[in-house]
Length: 136
Length: 365
Image (spheres, each protein chain N blue to C red):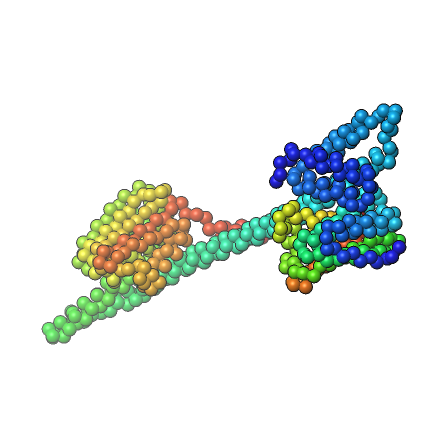
């Protein structure tokens, strides 16, 4: 298994590809059944976000490790337009486009570590980590 | 929000059928999409599970014939499908939990900040009270010191200057007697007259400076004497209406008297009045005094700072406040002036002095 997978997200079909890779990696690392579903949910929301709020982008999927624990790191990246107010974007209920605004806060609640960087107009990078033994 | 009662029963069944047939990520993703759609439309978690069970019942309910045995793998796959449809609910629950934590933190912080502000406000108000108390005490001390100083000057004038003038008067009297020259006699008599005029003026000064004998003769009588002197000096009409039933306590009585003195001095110096009226009455458990003249008046707004200094209004006010009373002045150019003062029937205790006394007593062995 490659330890770094690059998945371009340009259409809904790419979401399926992302989910497949994430599920396979989660199984490989022996995540619990619910942990697997959470991870797949996370990558789905990340991909949806790239399609809904941007013109697409890519997700980098790789193994993460720290002493005595393994995990998965997902990095979602787009090319613009960037988010002016990152803190507000992480408020549930905030959405520039209607809907429930659950995407980014949901992603954060599903993962163990969450980071977001955005620069107008360069684009946004979201990084999340999940550990096999951790509780999200 | 969509109507929650419209269950996507057919679409759910179709998606589940597709998944059972193909069992791939693409058909499983449909479960997630349906779950998220149900969440956003407001469908409850239990409703979604019931929807799933109804689909299962339609799919497997009548297949338990010997010919068609339900495949175990189908049951497992249906469960996977349900789990995937429930995943959005799991996510929403996580978000709401985090939001609730944030709100709780904010509420706690707001409550703590509120308590801090209230404590700070309490301390500030206490400081204001202390300052106000201190200011009152200083004003009262000042009034006390002033009364003492007046008393001292009055005694000095009475016991010394007036005695010297009296001796001078007698000496001139002797000289007039032994003088034969009528011209010299007339000159001595004129000098004697001036000495007596000076004596009268000094006696008036002593009268003004000395604390009035309020307890013996009463506030009304003392004010009447002042008014009569004013009338004799200026040739104006004066009136006194004394409606007091109970005399004010000594401290308050002196305050009223000094305010009257100041007001009548203003009548004498500035008013060019033809008449002055003093009214004493009982009001709100205290003593009210009104002094009115028909003189030229002044515009209180136009020269607020200047006039209050000029007419001794600040001094009157401070004196009234030392016994818990107040002073009000009304005037208009050409419409005369009215000074109204009130003092309570019972003078409030001066707390700092009392505390000082208690400490001193307790400190003594």
